[in-house]
Length: 495
Image 1 (cartoon, one colour):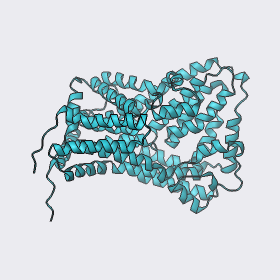
Image 2 (cartoon, one colour):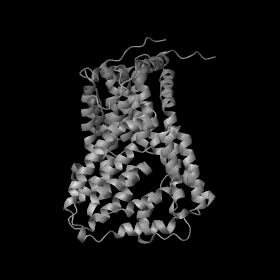
Image 3 (tube, one colour):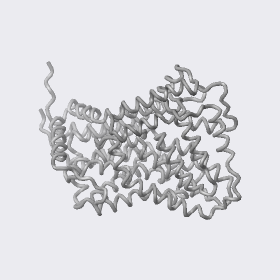
Image 4 (cartoon, rainbow, N blue to C red):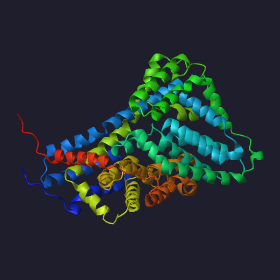
């Protein structure tokens, strides 16, 4: 056995800086896939770990333990993909979209765009999908009206999309944030309300005031919305029972039932709806669980007409295979976190980061700074959730702060900041999809930048800050020490 050494600050930071550099140059500048960049950074961390006296088996054991900790949430991600496919085939999501579009009012276009996009994003769990479907429809509505500011409409759409993405149990980022902080999913979502609801209400007030200047009398309505709804009604049969899967998920959330069984139950009901009401074959219904829903599964009576591209963008999604990309980046990021954890580098980095953080408010500010730095440098939402959460979790616990405060702050400073940064993939996607430059809609995407304001205020006032009981703190610290002891223990001798 070699003597194990604690890393210097320079060695502890080397793999982190390597990852940031690789992501900045390789992924952003050269357009290379993000996953190999993270793995290369993990290799750098592994070399440093071996230099410090750790064995390959010890490194891999720590990585495996990290993956095991988040495996339940990764299984939830797969189940989410399955459920979205089932809800699409069963008509649940199409019906929600149909009636959401029906409430469009020219006089209240901005606030309607915010509300409807929020509802759709909560039901689908995808910000990009909501912007690319409902968001595009609202931009079409805006183009047909006089006196409408496209930047405000785009800001309302982006705000609504990320409100729903942040609070939806179907969202991959929400599930990842809950997993890496080891907080139950619905507990995490409920704690997000402290900053997300005030931000949404602020956005709603802004949209209402901004909409006062629109002349509703000159608006003739939206042909695009009419075409989409006409196509939806020709392909699906609406029935009150289609809402049953939604009610099952809401009931499970309120009763704090296990997430995966609730989602599987809702999916099973949606599958019955697909066969009974939508006349989709059993084979196609099961295919939608794996590969996602496709318009070709609908019967011969379906006629998308001119809206075929828009309806396809709306509905062709879901399935377990659709979550594989998220799972892959999650595995790579967890591997990186495990490699640098084995050397106790995280302890050293957190100690230095929190040297100046003497109060709860300053801890929240430090977390926000780390989140902004990570998303601004890596341009990857998953990494920007995983890295700060891994770095800060133990520090929160030692200060008596519940880890759900960490999960909320990381989402406030990474998840919803990403679409208002022009150089990120999300910012580029939003601008290209909506036809409005990122810097044009940024001031109006109120929800995306007010979250960090409310997070800071709550941090210094103590409002909405959950504290650990002495028993909870002792239990979590004991678990952390056990993990450290396991990570540094010598590997068992081969038989």
